[in-house]
Image (cartoon, rainbow, N blue to C red; front, side, top):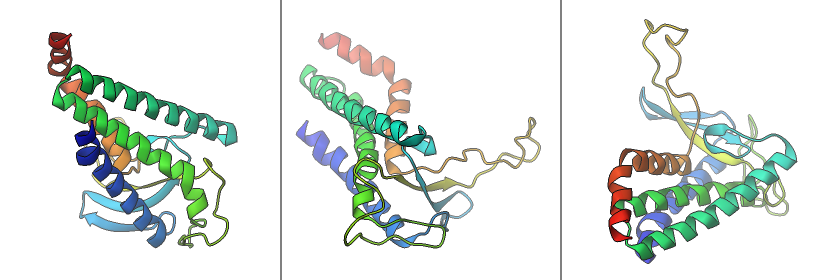
Amino acid sequence: MRKLVLRWLLPLLLADQALKFYIKLNFSIHQSDGFIPGILELRFLENEGMAFGWALPGVAGKLLLTTFRILASIAIGVYLSRLVKEGAHKGMLRCITLIWAGAIGNIIDGAFYGLIFTHSGWDTVATFASTGGYASLFMANVVDMFHFLVTWPNWMPWGLGGAEIFPPVWNIADAAISIGVIWILLRQRTFFDSLGTKA
């Protein structure tokens, strides 16, 4: 468990938070900058909570989402600890660690960024808050910054021609969760057969 935390969880969390701090302190809302020409750009957006900009509305929705996230993160940590003790496949352990790191990464934003930073606006770049930040505990927004520029070919039917293939703006934490889940789905036979042979 310690190796997973040191080699996977902490580096992902540090990278996620370092990039979010950089974006928050250097970009105004919707400001963009090139990253991989024609493929990926940095575009600063904030959302109220879920991956890829999805959110539950209002204060109640925010608190519900934060509570769910915290409980889910605790459950993932407990599950990972159990898998380690059972000698689960290393790939499975790494996938669960990716999901755990992503969940924790987005919890940090939503829980604490409102206390740490001033408000980000269309023409306003945030700074570190000297007194009060822009939101109370657990009521801040999640920082997103990656935006795919790739579009469907113009000949695509159903109105897809020229539209973005993947329009949501996302962050490292979202990517970690997605990669972990997709890899489990792709390798589930190997991962879960391995668990079965050790039961």
